[in-house]
Length: 371
Image: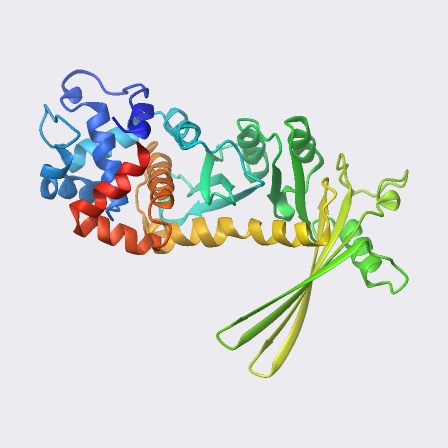
């Protein structure tokens, strides 16, 4: 049996009585395989099972036959989302992914998951993404009395952060979050914006002052589709003035602050040039090149996860709304994406999903990555 399915076999079955006609592992395996091969809904899972029964019976006995779309829908509504999400850690253990240099945290709203009749708002999921491996390593859902900040802390508390650099946008530039990361053996890198107005203004003024002496600088240039972007990365380890006895109402107590960073991005397109400066705080003593790599790595959670889920898996239009269905199906999509990442790195996710849907031979090559 494939390793990920060994992990799925440990999940508690929420069904009872006649609802257990189909084995839990069979239903989950079909759903995961179908998602890898291009399916996007419970109706798709059932259709995939009927059309690809020969392939499925190569590794499933299916004593209850093929499940209907109602069976898939009912199971994902009832399944414990915390237990299901724990499959991320188990899957990465089997792959030998012991850690990564950068773990990016970010939230995403499932826009169509709201239920107006039940007064239920859209599901908001916070994800931890291993930027180097380009894999999801965990997710939590913001509860009714939670926000993204507290949900991110809950998620970080479940992950071994030893030797990692955790990156987050300005929302997560919080003393308690920074302390949690340090306590769990990691370092942090946060964007500094106007939600910390005094700190932001002072750091911006420091980098703008010609008398300031940065400790390192690194420049990169990208050119694509008539657009040229030059990014100048500057770092400073002079943080003594940031940790003095002075006190501002908005000042976050950030434990271990070691580096100030700035990215100055100059973009030229159609003969017009614009410049934007972004500022960062970090507990790691990053040189300019490492700082540039970490900032770039953080954006992979948008480009390699959220964008792929929306465009490739059509997640932004998923209409599952009942019970735990939306949360469990976003976990399923991320598990499928993790599997696809491990197979045939020379092909795009879109091509791998299409070819898995068209060819049993290619589908076996993708599924075989989980052995």
